[in-house]
Length: 311
Image (cartoon, rainbow, N blue to C red):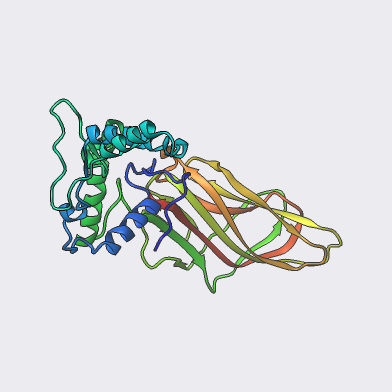
């Protein structure tokens, strides 16, 4: 069974306005363990408890007086017949009900105490709190019922955005690479069989997003170049917005190349938030703005994007 979510897990997801995934799984497990709605035990049967025991307050008072009288018994001396007589008289006041006789009914002005509380004894504040959550529980049950009927879609789209492009047997010759950025182009296929909210342009090496949200950009890059260098070099990598003519904010990184190294084959993941002003803009990967590299060739490349959850 799924553990109850930690206190830090919100009950309602701020992004969707619906129940969070952790609480939904926990409640669904509870629903399954209690019979998935097929349990024959009714609420009335669950409320069955021991029969309340009625207590006669007047009898309690008489018993208390008798017990107080009994406490005097150790002090009774055989040569004090009057005190002994008073103790015996007090003992006669202790009344025990016969086994086959029901308890004496209390006077009208005496409130009867119950040993076993009923639901009417629950504090009103607790009942008020239960009432506040009644509508939310109804929503949860509707979600559970709808899930059994079919997949539940989260607003506004309820699907994860995904798409990308990759370069197969199509090397790209760059030549000398130094201060200027050079785009990676000439991709050969899509990285996903089914694109969702993402369109691609293989020849120009661009992808375009349709929905705003938080995304992870992933770049795989294979390069070869001359290795006749005795010091560490760097290559700049960035995501460029071709439509706006600007670099995507926080979507850049630096690749370090060791001395006498003749190539790299690395992967990079860059988290980026795309606002509505970036939608339907062509985005591409560019390299450059670093050290001087000779005879540079792109032997492999992939550029993909996936949203962080449904958007």
